[in-house]
Image (cartoon, rainbow, N blue to C red; front, side, top):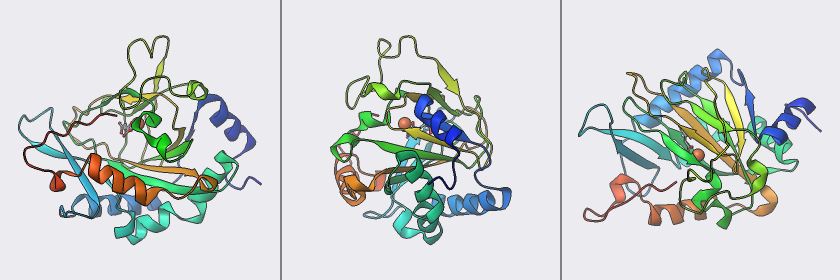
Length: 253
Ligand SMILES: O=C(O)CCC(=O)C(=O)O
Ligand SMILES: [Fe+2]
């Protein structure tokens, strides 16, 4: 039974591999979520907890800016309730046509000077070691535009499985013929997308952050993998504060 989506929205999701939902959160709700984002953004870096990643600013050489925080749900009641709450789980259930469970959560900050993302399918980041399909919900915190690096998606390529290789972005050859459609969005707008939907985004060369919340779920029937995923990621790609000084860490996909 559909409670939140219409048959038409379901159909669009199936055909395109993504679905844009304008105004999923009303002004007051997204203001609250924005305040939570501000809270986690100013948390101190602590080993063994939530995972903070930094990048070199493209605008101010030598400056490190916050790029991403992951695994913050257990440390923030508001986010925990939003992310595992009835509405979000039910919405993803409707898209999977079966119950869903949280796989991972992150905020991409894309601060002024923050870099973009080369074309990829999220499944290229080894997610299929955990489950066969994921649905990610993008929740817009700050208005996102072509200028500050909004998400761009290719329509209708999600049923082709892995188009590229694992742990590598899509190549020129892989994306031949694909058209990436920018999805500018206002605070509170959401995009639900399939883990095989190719996407990319540009850098943020404006003076304001472009913050986005990404919540990723898998079918509950395929198991609860969140803790194992983060244990594995902490080892293979640790947050900045847990890194060994002489080792080089490269972001892959
Ligand atoms: O936030 C963006 O601009 C894109 C991020 C993305 O595709 C990812 O983190 O996998
Ligand atoms: Fe991605």
